Image (cartoon, rainbow, N blue to C red; front, side, top):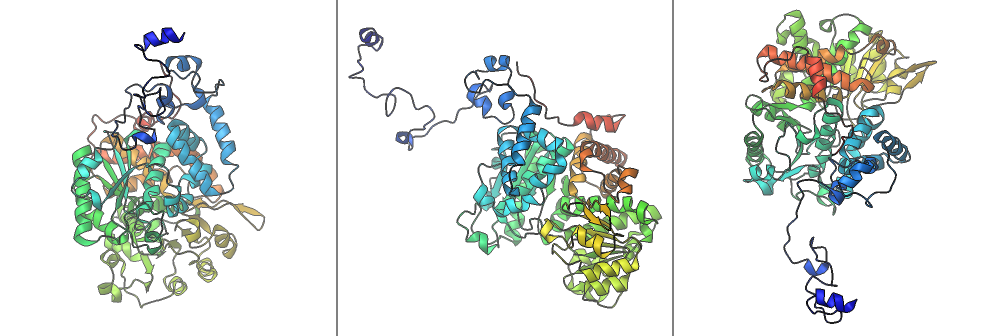
Amino acid sequence: MESTLKEMRNGESVLDMTDERGVGGGVGDIYGEDRATEDQLLTPWSFTIASGHSLLRDPRYNKGLAFTEAERDAHYLRGLLPPVILSQEHQEKRLMHTLRQYQVPLHRYMAMMDLQERNERLFYKLLIDHVEELLPVVYTPVVGEACQKYGSIFRRPQGLYISLKEKGKIFEVLKNWPERSIQVIVVTDGERILGLGDLGCQGMGIPVGKLSLYTALGGVRPSVCLPVTIDVGTNNKHLLEDEFYIGLRQRRATGQEYAELLDEFMSAVKQNYGEKVLVQFEDFANHNAFELLKKYGTTHLVFNDDIQGTASVVLAGLVAALRLVGGALADHTFLFLGAGEAGTGIAELIALEVSKKTKAPVEEARKKIWLVDSKGLIVSSRKESIQHFKQPWAHEHEPIKELVDAVKAIKPSVLIGTSGVGKTFTKEVVEAMAALNEKPLILALSNPTSQSECTAEEAYTWTEGRAIFASGSPFDPVKYDGKVFIPGQANNAYIFPGFGLGIIMSGTIRVHDDLLLAASEALAGQVTEENYEKGLIYPPFSNIRKISAHIAANVAAKAYELGLATRLPRPQDLVKYAESCMYTPVYRQYR
């Protein structure tokens, strides 16, 4: 045998063979995995047609144990998988069983992110089929904790990180993303993550989570979604001193340096992806959020979920609540705790809806909407000292410092919290609302749950079960006086996925306020009598794909009406068209 092999080796023997193939002999180090090759340059090859090991590592095509016998033969998977074949439904059941074993919510989040990175279709199938259970895991409230600890749990990048180091070459950086046809970008600079403050580069969990919901709830294909974090530093001292922090270790850039980076980003996005790419600004601080909408609203297809999405979902809840409290929107008086981007955005959309219904000027509609900020009730005597976006809400009234005194003086029928500060709807405040109204409408919208202005249990208990309550983050049902109350959730996830789908499928080129009103009307129209009987002002999330289709259809219809839609001819049945455009995550068969 050895003599035969020696001839095949051109006279070389096992004993005298030189190691020309790499350290240790025998196997060429194609992928540069030996320590001896650490200083050598190598080429990271990829395959046009995924097969074998590469197929199992590609989350877009991997089906795990669901590959059939024929697929295992055709794609060189024999021996790479155990012999059992499990259907997607069986895999789903097994994974839900595993997820429910975790006691720590962050561990569930990490498990879901791991699944998304290895089997994309199974991740979305799981999220769609168990949306009410898993929505709080992949988004608020658990995503807040994930962002706080992002440096410690970071495993592999899930989006684009554009920092000050990339200034002058953002166009080239965008080309590094593997997908060329992008339709939705969610971008944050991490300065105001939920109610948690400046988390810098670690805010990436927000764009990743939002785009997961664009796909699961709105049916937007995952391949056309791009999460982006703009890293200009952080003013969070704890993060700057954290050895595991993954962002720039410097204080935030501001002024011209910040504006130039954002301007380069917006120009590069339009140049790379065209006029109809939707850019959603997410969790920017107030001073930048309003400025960005103002600057790019007429030149780009932009949307701020904190300002416009929150406003749309809250307006939908208010319109639906009229069935329970009676009267028209114009008959009610609104008091806000919090006058930032969410509070002023909601207030403005309420005023626009009232103006539209009553034919009165918007300025007149604003007079029944009052805002309280950290310094007290916003009144005309403060007009010169407050930020520009608060000025339309500075009405004639004597100054009031405390919220409870503002409730007693203004006598609102609706109390809305967007302060980002927990426990601010005290017992005294809620009891004052209950004394003024038979059915006080109380919306504690701040996220995550720890920052909610009050809990569902507090709202129902302090009003003796008379409150109509909704919150930003989910609360469990509350039992009071022998009756079970199911709190509503004014979650932006009701609006932005369907809103985005409507924009995309109609080829809309700009976001108009009327599109937000159309989304609100569609959502309010999905609340059923059965929901009202339970005191709910939002439909259950279990129907979210159907809800999103109706929102998309209503938004698209309004876009066509306003002349903003470019995809022609207009489909006859927009709801059916929306449903036909939706991504479905069932496994495909491979030939």
